[in-house]
Structures are given as structure tokens and as C-alpha cells.
Length: 431
Image (tube, rainbow, N blue to C red; front, side, top):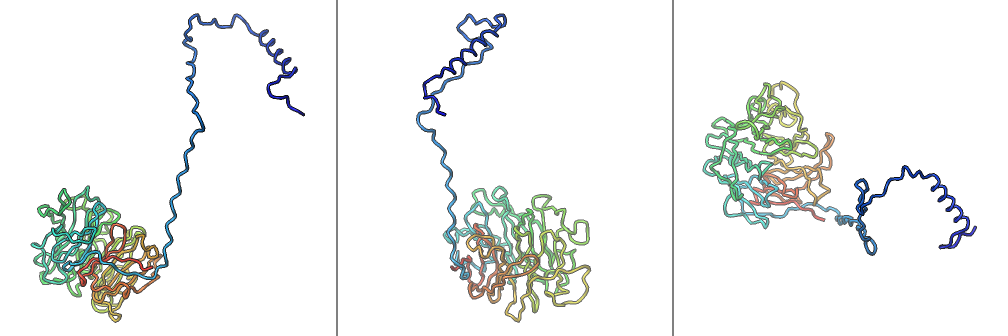
């Protein structure tokens, strides 16, 4: 059927329209027709006439879709690892610390100084902290051993240090940073904890300070003496990992979920049965605590436990690693190490490291790195589901001299404090 041409009206259409008009007029009742207003103004009940805005000229611009993020360039295959020098010229460096609000790195020296390192690797002339006047350094295992910023820094301007004092005891001390961030105000020193030792015992002091994802301050403490039985006595602070709430109480509070809050051990103690847990780390991604414990005669050990497994007894001195050592029977179950390194293989003093969570070496994600202070031996491995895998000897790649500590920079890349090289190093990939 053909349609009528535009602009023309059919006869049928005219007839229909006329019929509709006559019907409408016949049904209208004049009595119900409202009177028209006499004024030119619209009645109060009439709606306001719609405002007529000119239609936009031309096509309405459309929002352009956001460009997708460019895909990262694929990395070349990883050939190995090496180290680059970040800064050098330290005197017996033992620890490195960072804060996200500052682009400097901070290196603690055993003698009692914390030195700030600028982004270009220069060691600043003025020390960030100077406690040389109060630090005991008679033994190679004494001195300024640990250093950490409060996790809320700079809103909370406190920093924490762990060092040996005359009489061979160890002190945990808090300080405050000056408002300009240039240095620590020594007059703000507050001793939070005194760890008493036998006056003739100078070794096995531990000294690592680390804030966990729980906001608590974790502290490692050595057993205080050769073949000491302190490790099996949770009533003492020696041979332990401590866990403190430095944001409550005076001078600190005991976390309510510490294992000995109700008795049976010192309330500060979280784990015990350790000889000299010189360095430990926490991986918040997997929620694991890695403790490297320096051995006595034949075995260095690495213990890994979930953060929530409070009250673990790692067996020293009943056991060295998994080998019977001092004798005796534990009062409860012992937690075995996940990795043992023997002195027959050249190990003699393990330096605990960190779990890698940076971006430059994605192949290393979730892997733990550690080393040995005596010969620079180094290794990485992955721990998952209670099993160790991907063990790789990194000794020849990294060429360390006397690694005393590990850390991470602002990007999560691995830092190594090398006592023997008097340097701060960064692990980088070879591709």
C-alpha cells in the first residue's frame, strides 16, 4: 500500500476529525466550565509557564572516555641479584630505619650515633641521634643495637632506641624529634624498660625493634649469657620476644592478648626459648613472624610462626635447632625451627632479614632473605603452607662482607647494612 505524500490530508482524515470535534462540543457542560481570569496575570492555581531556554546550537559535546592505563613494560627475565651502594663511610653500622614522611634513610652505628642519609647518598654531618655518652660498647655485642620510628610519625614524633648501658644492662628508651625534623631532642629521653643482666654477662643482647601491623612494639632480647638457662624461664625478659603497647599506660601497657597476662610468665613476653634473636621481621601480608636465632656450637636457626600464635617456646637451651643441647625437659610443647644452617657449612652467626614485598623484583615477592655475619653467606627462600621452597644461594651474587642487618627503603626494596663494608647497600635485579 502506498502512503500519502507528506503535507497532504486525506478525505477520510477530514471526516474523522470533524466527528471528534462535534462529539466533544456536545458533551461539554457550561455550568462546570471555569470562568476565565479577568486579569492578564495567571491565576494563583495556574502553574508557572516553563522557562524557554534556547536550544544549544550544534551537536552536544560527548564526554570522551578515559584512556586506559598503559600496560607496564614487560620485564626481561631475572638473571640474578646484585647490590648497589646507597651510602658508605659509616662506623660499625648495625641498623637502618625509614619513615614514609621523610626521604632520608637513618643508619644506627654501634657507638651510639644515628646518621641521616640524604637521597643522593650523602651522610649528613650532624647526627640525628647521639647517645654516645650513655652507651656501653665494651663488647662487640654491645652498643646502640636497635632503632625505630613510631608508625604514626610525624604526627607522633617519638622514636625508640635499644642500647647497652654501663653495668651491662640494656635499656629501651623513647625520644622525640624536634619540630623541624632535623634531629632528636636528647632532653626528651624516657626509659621505658630496663632489662637487667648479670653484671659480668656482656653477650647475647638481641636488640631489634619493630612495630607490627597491630601497632605494638616488638623487641628481641638475648638470653644474656653463654649456655644460659634463662631461655626456659618466661618469668625473665631474657631470651624472648617482647610485645608492648607504647600508646597506652605509663610508660607502656601490656596488650590484653599477650600470653602471660594472667600469670605464668612476665606479661611483656610474647615468645621465649631463644638464645640471641639478633634480628627478626614481620610479614604483614601473610601474617608471619620470622625469627633468626644465633646458635651456640653447631646450628643457626630460623623460626617462623603466625603472629597470633602467642607463647611459643623455641627450645633453647634444651635444644639447639632440633639437636639436644643442654638437657632437661620442657614444661610444654616446643616449636621447631623451619630452617637449620650448620657450622659445618660455614655458618656461625645468622643475620635475620626481611620478606620482599617491593616491585622491582616481582619474581622475589614473598621470599625471605637472610645472611651470615661471619662469611657473608646469603640465601633466599619462600615459606608457604608450612613448607620451604625455592631455596637459592645468593652468596656469590651479593658479595657481602659482614651483613649486620636488613631493612627496606621507601619503595619496599631490600636494604642491607654491611658492617664489614661500612656501607648501606640496596639489592637490585640483574636482567
